[in-house]
Amino acid sequence: MRIFLKVINSKWFQHPVFWVLSIYAIGNYFAISNLFKFIDFFYSLLFHIPLVFLVYINLRLLIPKFLQKGKYLLYGLAGLLLLAATYGIHEFTFELLLPVLPTEFYMVSFTDWEVLLTIFSIYLVLTTLLTLSKSWYRLQQVEKEKLSIELNSLKAQVNPHFLFNSLNSIYSLALAKSEQTAETVLELSNLLRYMLYEVSEEKVDLRKEVEMIENYIELQKLRADDSTEVKFEIMGDLNETKVAPLLFFPLIENAFKHGVKGVSESAFIHLMLNVKRGIEFTIVNNKGQVDDMEKGKFGGIGLENVRRRLELIYPDAHEFEVIETEDVFEVKLKLI
Image 1 (cartoon, one colour):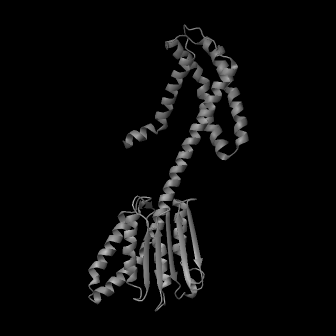
Image 2 (cartoon, helix red, strand yellow; image 1 turned 180 degrees about the vertical axis):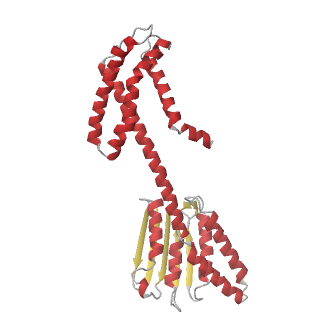
């Protein structure tokens, strides 16, 4: 299949097919009877001498030199000159070349000049549009690849610190011979499997994402003080709804990282997911102690990660609001 696609996408296949179809179409158009005879084929071949000149001068010279460089006026003027030259080659072919050819056929160019210029203009426009469409398609493929690379990079930013902190917490549980150790290892294993193998698609089932968020919260709570209040409220039906994977994780990580930092009591993190009208996700947490280096950059990296992914995956289909007071930090995200 790959070889077949490679062949049909090759210019060595596409150009001969184009000219074969063109010769047949022109021959039928000028045919002297309902049957396609050799004389019609021969006439079509001669008719294509100026057409081949027009098409390849346009493809190899005019489009790369003028059109693709944004010199539209020059391209238009050059196109008019090319049409005039093509008409001249047509007249030369039938008035001077044909009479000296060793053939038993007697032919003349019996086509009006208006019809000739119309046909030549169609070929000029057609080859230009085909070239531009191929360029656009290649550009779209490159942009799609760049988008995929950037999204994968943004996903990867979620993992490292969280994994390091979780392993430290599990290590502490193991030293204390806690009964939570095995369950915590299983939660971490499930979450890592999800992050590594199940988020390759642009969108995933929201129910699965919520399940992983709950695992993620349980692991993050290992590092929080017992007095920290963590609530996760879900409203609406999660079925039949998809969302970009790991989109909410940086927001939750920031809440645990900054919200409970240096707070011994009254720390809270409240999460709310509403899927009754689109997807609405809100997370509110108290502000913990902020280092001098972090002042003015509360949750900066995580927020920028989410903003960038929203721009890439939900352009013009999202609302993202950050509300910050002296003691509380709130993020509201709505996917339309």
